[in-house]
Length: 296
Image 1 (cartoon, rainbow, N blue to C red):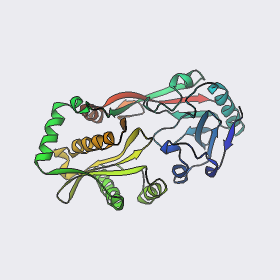
Image 2 (image 1 turned 90 degrees about the horizontal axis):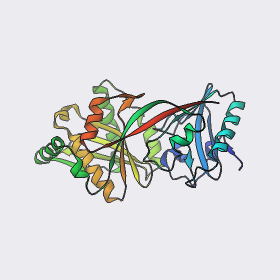
Image 3 (image 1 turned 135 degrees about the vertical axis):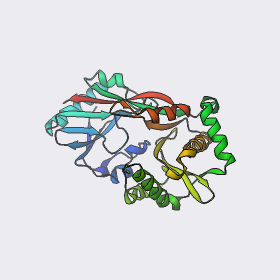
Image 4 (image 1 turned 180 degrees about the vertical axis):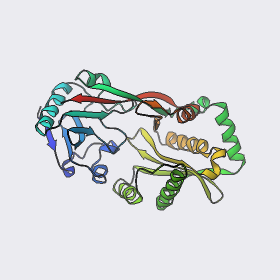
């Protein structure tokens, strides 16, 4: 089966429904040397930095999508990719693989069978959007939910013209923690404009004051990603993120989604315990999110 090599983002196949592999997503990013490979069964994008091809550095994860839900002949696909990358003086492949809830991707076993080695495993956490999710919340979180509601905090989905306000709020909250936001407003606006059905914003308010916000990404028709959460320092002791997650779970469950992906709770495999415990108390399930390496 012939290998298609796309060195221009405009050549990317249109039919992929995965948000981070959409042409509009790629067009909003800055890559040193974009390239992607495809055939009838598989697809994977890379950014080629000196000597290393990374799939793909400005999204939460990247790997090989199984376009026809098959892993048959994945070995020849990887072999052909390596041969082409070697001709481009690439020495190593790096894949930040998604959690197992993204079932359209090749498995870790598929990759390890082709000489990829796990460099480290991050802790990924997700909420299963079942009718029984409320039963999985820790009693402490249930008490916080009751307190927030009794004190007048309210959840709502925000409008498209409120995204800039949301971004400013997230920026200020991150700065108060000594952190940086990883995307500027103009780039986020570009993403929202290119992928208008993909990015959504939710908030918790008390009267006219914002206490917590999260921008989400509808990665597939079944999985939403908890992308940019933030809590106001003024309301941190009230834990409004508990009400925000509660509202997002109900929103996405009503839309027929199966998972709310809360992302990683570790850095290069080292656990961030307070974050991990908070998500666990919100009923989250842990999976591995490995980063794999392979010499070309």
